[in-house]
Amino acid sequence: MAEQVRYYATGRRKTAVAKVWLTPGTGQVTVNDRPLLDYLGRRTLEVMVMQPFETASVVGKFDVRVRALGGGLAGQAGAIRHGISRALVAMDENLRPMLRRLGLLTRDARMKERKKYGRKRARRGFQFSKR
Image (cartoon, rainbow, N blue to C red; front, side, top):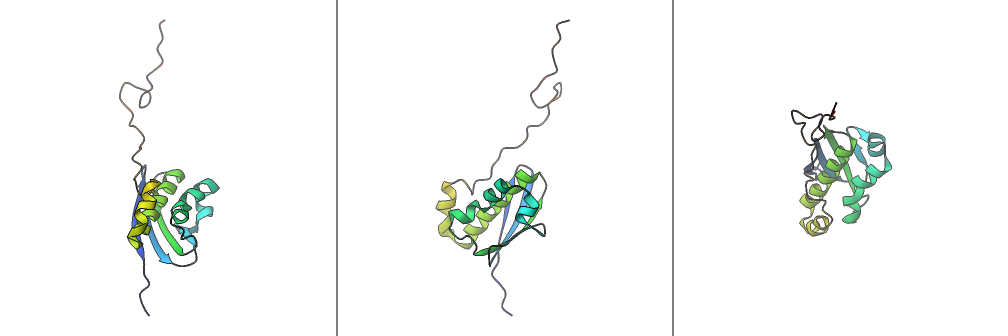
């Protein structure tokens, strides 16, 4: 039996990491052994995850298997989108300019700011009382 072609990439967003494997198939997306919409629970996140396929116009041509770790659902969805974009570029280098234009290959570096001492949160100080 011939080895099936697989493309692998890692996507990251906030504290989430997504390990993505693309194989030629019917467009089935599985995240942590569950269907995409079942895992994410929101249509908006599903649309966000499918954006790289629509941009590259290869909807329904690849099966996607994802192992998502860390962060919350929105962060994981962003990480999955990043991973799928990178895997598509690994498959076909000609897709790079198209995906780059929409910013799908750029790792979103926005992270939660750490809490500072002497403050309630990252920036909010304690309430000032004159009396």
